[in-house]
Amino acid sequence: MPYTILIIEDDVEIGDMLRILLQQNGYQTINAYSGTEGILAHGKEPDPS
Image (cartoon, rainbow, N blue to C red; front, side, top):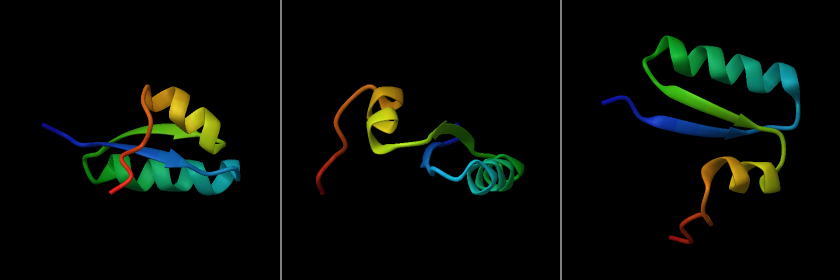
């Protein structure tokens, strides 16, 4: 079962580079361009631990 990684990065080129590298290594990714967008994409508040 592949892990899904949420990438929060406001620079499109850096976000795309991270997405490509992670997907080439078997991870699924979700891209967001701000913390608020990341929370919405994740669907819940982040774990504080």
